[in-house]
Structures are given as structure tokens and as C-alpha cells.
Image (cartoon, rainbow, N blue to C red; front, side):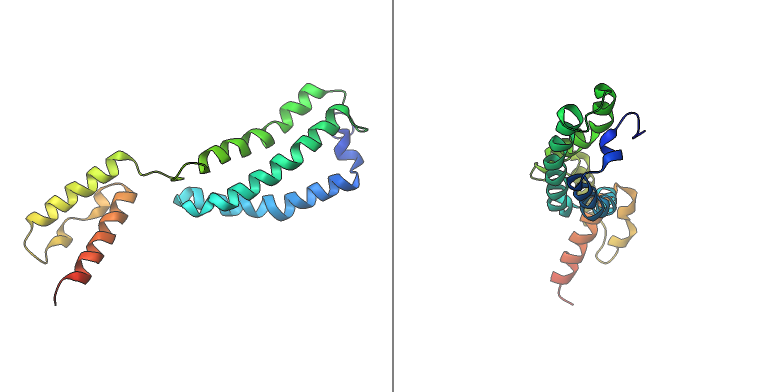
Length: 158
């Protein structure tokens, strides 16, 4: 690949080696953190995503500029641009995602499910609220119901 299509990778100038180290030290750990955060829908991924995206969007114009006009320019510009384009598009999409107030907004049906469970809970005699399991609803609704039950039980006189 690098001998014919991507001469920059074959040449590895010092600045490109620094970019590779950025990839190892910033991007690789981000991928591990992001996979877990996106699967568990954790809003705490906002700052790591901003750092990751900023690093990538800073180095990619330099790499693409070298590919198109530099000393190690490629003769297959379209192909190389296609290969490198995800490294520009993904950080832009991720930044757009974390720019919202809530990175993972709750679906509208989740709050409706919580209200339905609470109504059923209120209809039961005291102490029998465990008969209705929040696991019958979506995951976020179930977590919200459990949190509200814990808060309510801590306020009840014993």
C-alpha cells in the first residue's frame, strides 16, 4: 500500500511519526473509553470526544496537505482522500453529537413508561410495589423507576 499509493507512510518524516504517537497515546485509549461509554450511554464521554476530535481535526489537514501538495505527495489523490476521509468525517459527526445538551437524550416513551409504572405502584397496597418490576420496560425507564423508588423509600417513616 505505502510504496505505491501512500508514500507518506513509507517515508515517515519526523512530524508524521509524532502524529502516529498521537494516535497511539490519544486515539487508541479513546476508542476503548468510547465503546464502553456509547454502549452504556454515558454523557461523560463529552470531554474525551472533544479532545479526540480536536486532535484528529488538527493533524488531518496537515496529513492531507502533504498527500496532495507536499514532498511525499501521492499520485493517487482520489484513492488516498477516500481512505483518509473517515478520519475527518467521524470527528465532525462526533462533535455534532456531543454538542447537544444531552449526549444521549432519553426517548419520549421512557418517561411515559415510568409514569405508567408509578401509577400501577400507587394502586398497590403499601409494601407491595415490588410486584411490578421495572425490567418490563426499557433500560433507562427501569433505572429511573428504581432511583425514584429508592428516594421514596428513604423518605418514608419506618
